[in-house]
Each structure stands twice: as C-alpha cells, then as structure tokens.
Length: 70
Length: 402
Image (cartoon, rainbow over all chains, first blue to last red; front, top):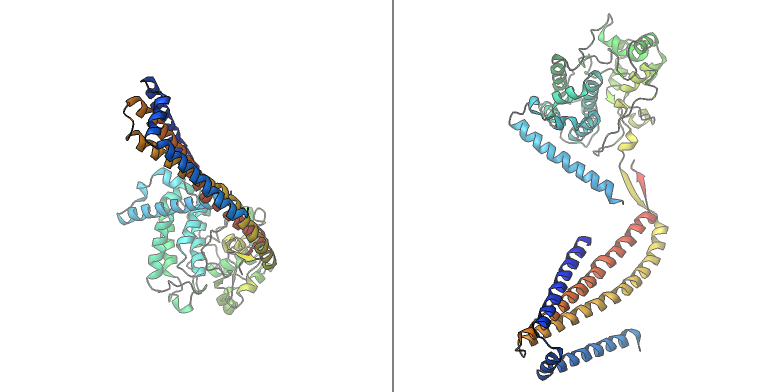
C-alpha cells in the first residue's frame, strides 16, 4: 500500500506539473480567459457543466435523504 | 511486529531448501568435500547441522533417528576442529542420504506411525546398517585425523565398560578427573559394536547407585533398555541442545543421562521430566504448541466486536464513497474539457490552456480514486485484520500438545 501511495503521488505530481506547464504555455502564447469562457458558452460547454454539477448535487441530496431520513 | 519471526523463519527455511537442492545437485554430480566453498561451511555449526540432520531423518523411527543424531553429536564432541569435521561431513543432506541408503536397504520403514522400530527389523548381528554407515563416516574422519581415535578398551570387556560407565563410582571419579566435563569419556566413545542388539551403552537409572552390575547377569533388563526413552512426538521440530546439568563437575552423571534407555511400555513413565534424555534434547521445546480457544471470552468478544466493527466499517465507507464520487466527477469534468478543447476552440493557446486544466483534473481524479480504494482495501481491511488479531490475542491461548 505504501509503495502504491508513492507511485500514485508521483503520477499525480507529474500530471499536475504537465498541466501547469500546459496552462502556462497557453497563456504565454496568447490565451485569454474571456475568450475561452465565451467560446465554451457558445459551444454549450458551460451549460453542460452547470447541468452536470446540478445533477451531482441532486444525487447527493437524494442519498443524504435516504441515509439520514431527512 | 508478529510477522517478523515468522518471516525470518520462512527466509531461513527457504535458504535451507535452496542449499539442500544445491548440495543435492553437487552430490549427484560427484560432489567432493574439497569443492565445498568456505562460506558454505562456515555458515553452519554443530547445532545447525544436527538440527537440519534431525529434520532430514524424520523418515526413520524415532529411536533410530535419535541414535543416529547421537552418533553425529558424539563426533562433534570428539573433534577439536569443528569446522574441519563439518567440511568432512559436507552437509546434513549428504549425511542424511548416507543414512537413508543404509536405512532403507533392509527395512521398508518409511512410516513414522510408531516411535519404535519393530524387533524383527534389526539385523542378525544386532548392528543396523545405518549405524555401520555412520561408523564408516566416523572412521573416515578418524583417518583424516579430524576426530580423535577411540581410546583402546581397558582390561574390562565391552559390557563391563558400558556398565561401569554408569555404575562405578570409582571409574566415574577417575573419568571426571581425567577429562573435561563437556567431553564424553573414552569409554562412552566406544564404537557401537557392542554385543546384544548393538545399542550403545544401555543403562538403567537404577544403576546410578554406583554398583557394578555385569551385563550378563541381567539380560532381561538389557533388552528392556534397548529402547531410547522418548516423548511421543512424531512432528518434525527443531531440536534444542544444551549442556547436561551438572556436567561441569559430574562426568558420570552426564554419561548416565546420555543414554537413558527404557522399555517401550514404560515410555512415559521412564521418560524423566528433567529433560535429560539422550543428547539432552529439550523435549518440552519439541512439543508443538496448539491454540486453544477461551470459549467465554470468544463469545463475549464476538458479541461486542461484530457490531462495533460493522459500525466502524460503515463510518469508513462514507469517506470512501465521498472520494469515489469526487474522483468520478473530476474525471468526467476532465473528459468534458478535453472533448470541448478539440471541438469548438480554434486558437492553439486556448487549447493548450484547456488541455493543461484537463490534466490537472485527471490528476486530482486519480488521487481521489486511489484514496477511495485505500479506504476500502487498506483501512477497512486493516480494521478487520486488527479485530481478528485482537480476537486471537484475547480469546486464544497456546498450549503444548501431549
């Protein structure tokens, strides 16, 4: 288990590092958050993520009601 | 904590198994003692040699096995260079093969159902073949000047020697003065070619009074004394060797206990609880411990442990499921971001930003997923193991068999 923890943490750190590098490269090469948000909204991506998060909250509340009787 | 001795024992057992296979291969290919590497020899000593040999000779009847071990033990006591003797003996495996070949030559007694060999298994001249085989090994060691040559017999006959070893006060005093207490006297080192059934120095505990009893005067008692007193222990257990009590200043006593012999019927009665049997084997240490349940404690423990454990498992399942949900959500978000990056975005910089964010989401999802797995497979399983170990500790006790 301990060895597996080390492996997982190493993989996670590498992935996070690569992600940060990707974001940094993107912003250094001219990325713009407002444009990204606008494009995502145009592609219905923001709406999709919002509906997905609402669904998760709904599922959580359903299980909470089932377990706790609330 | 409790696993470390078992693990060590397992490693030792594996080492002995590999060494045995290695030596077997060398023996089959004409292995010579001169080829034996020093490390192989120096890693073993008398105790390990005899313990290993004792394990390898478990196919023999217990009395024969102990007799063979006693003969090898005497070789070690007679030698001044234990390492040279170990080199000459090569390995316990080789000696076990030698004994096994001689042992199986005339007796199909691979069963250990009985502690005692039947009388018809004996040779006509009373000396079993395996004893002769060991004597051959011993003579080879004597010829190589590793062992001291056996002292020439005194004016007494062999029988008188055997009996006066254990009976005569005067002789015992002379012997104890002549030799160190740890070393058996010259009489006790007589080759086992004595009369009767070839048993070495049969005695009875009654002979400790110091009176010499001629061997011919009690033939019946000599027959009875042929059987080495043993505890009923068919299991293979490591032997514990220790010096005879009082051996430092009482050589006669040591010799008497060296061959504590008795009748089969009087097995347990004759076996002294002082653990001073042949070779001074601690027979109590040879008994296999057995776990016995404390019933009341076990019932009470089960009554309390099961509900508490189930409650703890339920409690631990909550964070496990929470982390599982988080991981699933995070990974789905990452997938959505990646798919969106390749669908609607045309600027390379924006795609790079989205891919970077997706990688971070995947990393977090992996971390959450592993945490959930760790809760189920690590924490909950450890909890169950801990409860079982606690039950083992509180509700069971170890008792010696027999």
